[in-house]
Image 1 (cartoon, rainbow, N blue to C red):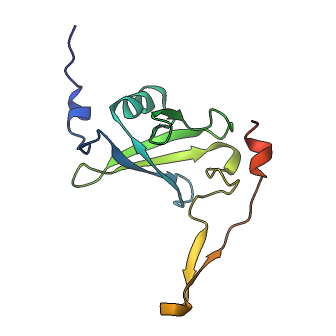
Image 2 (cartoon, rainbow, N blue to C red):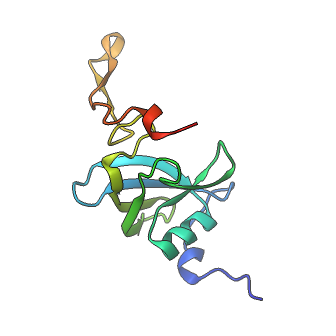
Length: 136
């Protein structure tokens, strides 16, 4: 039984923890939806299934996007940056919600002002109450 990685996977520069940053971008609009981590297993499963799978550092296990919310990400294209150390997933976000807060994007806060007057402003509405998404 061979444990040699496929050539495409061997080119990916995972960090010392075996992880690589992954950015999910809406394939239709170009909006950045979220950031997460991937390892060899999650990237391989993503490629094999066409559905985004990440590595949850807090739970120390594979995180199949949408497994509890139903808001899956179907991958349309995968890109690797010039240093081979960042993955860009262009996805079709099902349900229109990528963030666990019930928003379209995890990047819903914008810095306004400068210096001591700067503050984070929430720019995107909650599309669905997280309590209605994640049933405990």
